[in-house]
Length: 332
Image (tube, rainbow, N blue to C red; front, side, top):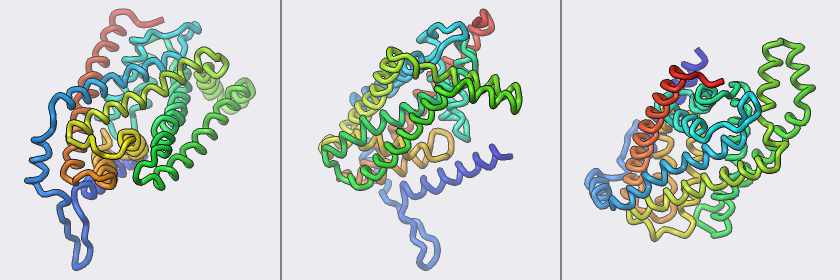
């Protein structure tokens, strides 16, 4: 029931966001919707898109899976303490993106844990700890790579960005400290959890072992470099999309602001693939930086569609590969 309510709430959020992305809502004299962009202008903006830049966007969008796979490989370990294969962590990331785009209730992270445990000899509880750690690192990298440079470049709408950066830095630092303290006190925490219930103790022990990269400078460095490179690749990806829709003349740093805005927006619980929420974020930000509403709407529609199709296709292939490998030769 809770999952159904969460999914229903996400659908409602997406529906409202989708309306706000493409229409002005007037309440005086009754509910009335006025299109933000006329169909003729939208068709013209879509037709003017440059295919070469869109291809570059699609390639870089797919390439963003590689640094995420490298990050996960640095953070997680097999049951015997060895490093998992890069192919296994890639499959886990691809399946996670598939789940994020087709399943409700933010199931992508749970799918990543399950996929990693199936793709290699990784305990699910350790995979869960590593995935949580990776999300904390992602937040810190998002602030460092997108918000801070954009603020230094004094891009438009910086007041809102500065507030988001300050909140994000505070949350990120708090989470990193919390995970470090949890790992340092892992034995005591596991004993306490075991006292409540043996199965909970085993799960907590595995979860804290998923934070073991905190004890290795080399692994932390590898994870940090991979984490920092992911938003850089995504920013380059969006930079290509901006040129595809003749938006290269927007302020320097627009791609960075776009990455930060989109990633913060899609963290809001919504329908699969963050439909509506993504469109609302893009159609709000780009016009505020000087883009024509029709260009912003076309950008949102096309980039979202390319992302969904790409990740669903890659995730489906990975899911089939992981299933086939498990049937033939189960790991461990």
